[in-house]
Length: 329
Ligand code: 8YV
Image 1: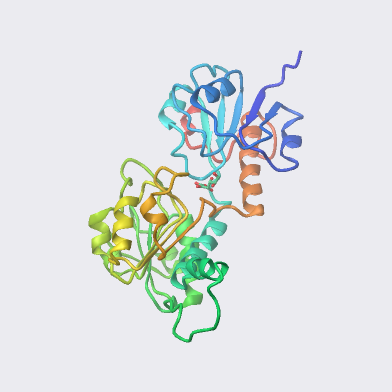
Image 2 (image 1 turned 180 degrees about the vertical axis):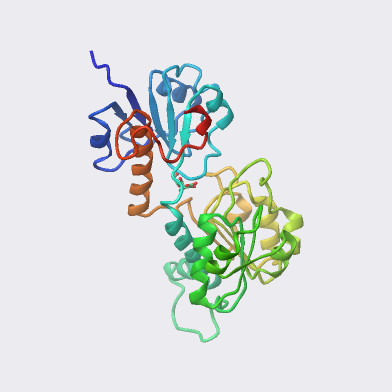
């Protein structure tokens, strides 16, 4: 009989990942991308000692009810709003995330979205592909320059800081709002100035959201906040759907009370509010800000490090590095 602990990987994974786990675990790795029902998730988790899961797996008290051996859930993301941390902690299950390894890729993507919206890349590309380009018109497809404009960042954690650092090359002043101001040295390194949320909304030409989704941040950007923004401003969300009231955003964009938006995340994704789909002044993408080969591989590796460490193996044996509820250890 195989008495190794068991680990379940909910998503198709990278080469080498199963091989790192196999000396110590009986590994079940899903070969296909599946959206598990609650019942399927509960059944998959039962009997596992560890689970490596992604955002689609929403795990709370019901899903772990039969998972009496489960010691760690390693989330393949930095955000963990898919997990009921209280319920998992109460059951003595450690939870880890993938903080840090995705900062630079997400920051790159935030800039890609920002430039894409400012220069109307999505709409221009759709127009070209539809065969409308017959001659170059001097005054067609005019976008707006990014250089010199004010960049606002709501949520100044490590991703926000990585976004801010890139602004130097574009000559953009950076304003930010956060639960608390950064230490002065960090502010200097990011060339960023702390302001209150209202000032951030009023003064940003580009406003990037990089805060976690919690009960406090749900609809942090709704109709009242959108009303404070400049009609020439562009809103970017690379954080979580639900931070923005997508219905209110669609109305503001349609009425040109806001110039544009770049959205990688949506309330209720993978469903996208139809009001947003109908607009040309938005660039939409399917939650891919961390999706580079290097970063997704690194995220998986971090999850494996945490699982191995939890069972006394690997580079962090006994000290899993990314535990969100260390009190259970
Ligand atoms: C997702 C993310 O993890 O890290 C996060 O919080 O939202 C992303 O990196 C990724 O899209 C996989 O679901």
